[in-house]
Image 1 (cartoon, protein in one colour):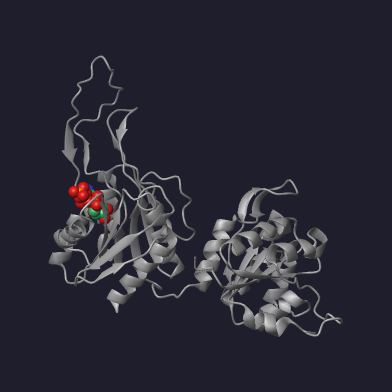
Image 2: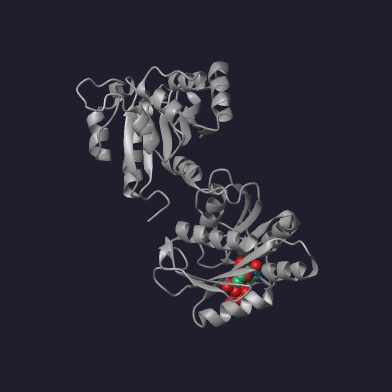
Length: 402
Ligand code: CTP
C-alpha cells in the first residue's frame, strides 16, 4: 500500500518521442495500485498504439473527443470528475500552448479545463523549443494556474541536441504526483532532517562507519516535501537520489553534521534526526596510510558530540525551539531504551526500531517502528514501507503541533 493505491490517475500522453516512456509510467502506477486512465492526443497515437496503453492500463484509452459509436459521447466531464490527479507526460510544446491559452480543441485539453484535480505537467521536447520564450511564457502561465511543472532533465536528446528537454525519470514525476495528492499540512514550515551514516576517517584508506543507507531519513525528507514543508536534508554518505525540491547538505563525519545541524537549528520548526551518527571517531587521523607493520593493534577513540542531546539541552533553555524528533536504533529493550533516550535527550517524539529484525532497520525498504511521544503516548506501527512510515511520523508531528 502506498499513497498512490486506489487513486485515479488520468495520464495525458502527447505526441513526442518520449511517449514510449509513458508506457513504463503506466505500469509503475499500476504496480502501486493506482487506476490509470490514459488519454492520448491525436499526435501521441502516431508514436505509440493506443492498444499498448489499453493493455498496460487494463482500461479503455481515450483519444477522440466525439466517439460516435460509444454510448458515452463526450467523455471529458466524467473523466475530469473521476481524476484524483492529472499527469501529462510527455507534455509537448503544442499541448502546453493549448493549456496555457485555455483551448479546448481536443479531449486532453478539454478535460484539463474541466477538472478540479491537481495537474502535473512533465514537458519533453527539443531543447530549443523548450527554451523558446513562447514555451517559457506558456509554462509560466501554467504555474500561475497552479499546475506543477516538473522541469525536464538535461542530456542528449533523441534529435541529437544537448540541453534541457528530456523527460524526467519516473521517480521525480512520482514525487510530484504524490505532492499533488498530499494534504499540505506542513505548508511553509522549515524542516530539518538528518540521514545516513557518518564516516570517521582513520587514514586516507580506512574509516569507521555503520550500516545505515539513509533510506529512512530520505523518506522522511521526501514526505515532508510532499506535505508542503521547506526541507533541508543533512546527509551523511548515501547513494540515494535526492528527493526533488529538497535542499541537500552533504556531510561526511559526525563533527561536520554537528556543525551543519547546529548552525541551522534555531530557525527550524521541526528537526528529525534519522541519521545513524557514529558515537566515536579515531582519536588521531593520519594524512598518510598507516602501514600494517607499524600499526598498533589497539584503536584509540574519541567521543563524538551527541547532536540530538545538545539540541535537547538547547530546547530546555529556549521557549520557542523546534519540535524534536529522534530515532532509537535498538537490538534489545526497545521500549525502555527509547523511553530513556526520549527523556535524556528532551525529545517531543521518538521513533524506535529493532535493527536486528530482517524486515526493519538498516538497508531494507520496510520498517516496523514504535512511536513514543513526550506524554508517554505509544503508537505501534505495523510493517510498512519506509515511505509510509515517514508519513505516519509526520502525522504524529502534525497532531502534536495542533
Ligand atoms: N544521535 C546524535 N548524535 C550522536 C548519536 C546519536 O544526534 N552522536 C541521535 C541519532 O540521530 C538518533 C538518536 O540520537 O536520533 C539516537 O541514536 P542511537 O544511535 O539510537 O542512540 P545513541 O544515543 O547513540 O545511544 P546508544 O548508542 O547507547 O544506543
